[in-house]
Length: 85
Picture (cartoon, helix red, strand yellow):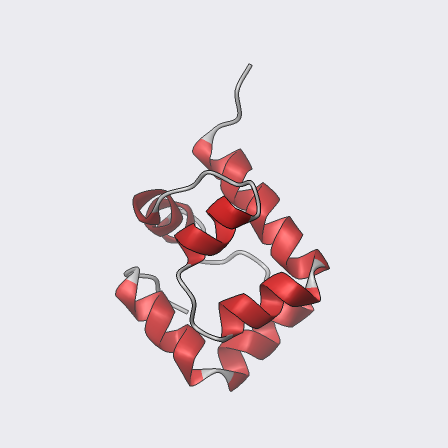
């Protein structure tokens, strides 16, 4: 059985939280879909939007909290994908 979009996004999220290299790309403002694809995760911008919209109260990892608090580029990327934080 293939993974759902939510499972694929969570797998990418887990990979980012575990990888300083992926974290650097995310905080540098690179395209999340392209980062995911290069790391072997097939997700779309629409799936990211839906995932975030469905989880407004999700607990963020330490990296995610630091990235949101400290990176203007990440905040811009979130806005481009229609995500709130």
